[in-house]
Image (cartoon, rainbow, N blue to C red):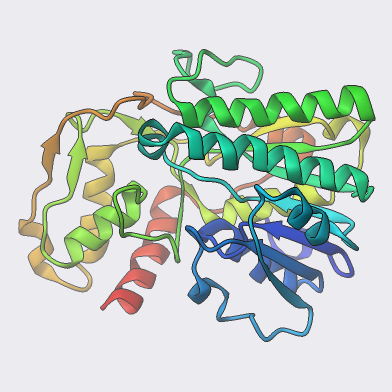
Length: 332
């Protein structure tokens, strides 16, 4: 998608929940650059203040520190907004297995709070982050929105609940939503630290300090890795969608290519060689498979292309080049 076809959000009053997080902060950055007024709601349990540095003093930006588990906070945050981009969640399959209660409270009860607050405020556009984890044990590839299996983790179950509640709100209240099933999003600002860090920043940071990246399983598991700029594009398209046939739908947001963990390590090493030749000597180590992991993930993006006009410009290699450069500049 070139700059001339990016949807205009100028003048829109948008609430971004989880706006201090990796995805949320990229969305806010682009929305402000396009002329929107943006309010960020975050409790900073996983979001970071440094993610807001580039725009925290922007005249059209407002920060509210609060928790989506508090309905009164949600009502206050939504006040005066015509659009909501709901990105706040406790991610990570392992986290949900270790603490399913917190995952449910944030991802289900918190989602319902912001959904109800948005309905009461007569929000016109409500877009929420769904997840490819919803496909569960469905074996068919590529993943098609209408064909899901049984959830394999508490996290997957919470994200399925979001889709169910969104459907119920349309049937009973006529409240329109759009859900975006993200597939393994990566890019600058993604946190490489902690036990629940995503695999790409984890691999990059390990290799940069001369440590072997740890692969769970034998390295054959595959994912549809999706660069953040593609996700930003999809959100802007969804926030400006108005045609009836585009609303109250779920869309896969991915690139549409499959990469194994072994291939991923190879691609990252290739890019880090531009900065440190010793990376070539580092080999991954293999650990046990993680409970709740889906072995393979590959998205069909036909529906998003046809209905939203989604046209991802960044494949894995292009996105990794930009991501590795960012980490090298910011983590060294």
